[in-house]
Image (cartoon, rainbow, N blue to C red):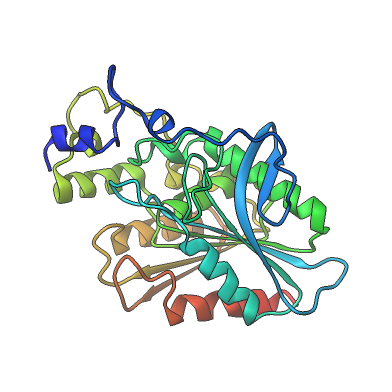
Length: 287
């Protein structure tokens, strides 16, 4: 893929070209008060879909699910809702929430406040992580949740990994599926795969100094009380297996509570039986 095609796709914003915020103007959040479908925190509105189990205590557990980057197109991200719904149907005492990441659009045309970014690791930064963490904190307080589980796929997994470092007391169990947890290595892999200039870290260019945080550099900040489960497909060609394995080893070296599992499949394993089964097992152990 050449750089002209990349720019035209809207992934990169240069002077005179439309950014995502200009192409897809964010909603005017005059209310943002429906807690089942949106969270208002720190003056921004983050869209969600909420699914409850049939039985709930006064202090239910909370699961929040994050989607991936969505590739090079302006595809609408909604599979996190399906994941949250599946888990809710097979669990007890759980508030299960699919969350739409900052700047993204879902199947209903709803848009979370914030900037979607260029999707080359820049949108895993502190600003976006803070918006998600603040939304989770609001949900936790509203539901008076006993335990909080955060599950992320692909770019959502990288955000999950950064969040447990930047906000170490918020999440009890983090589930990372197909994680780009070593961003420089992942960007190099993606450059080899796509030849898209923004992924190139080996040469100086206008995209080489992006403001991003790599989870593997933040492992010492993760709380020893947070459990981490890492799953990756054995044939993943987008976030290759070694990225998750390398992050897992770094966590273990730092004395963190981590489990690593390689399962059969490629990059899109999030809604498959092995991942669903792992998450259900984690949720059921919270009871």
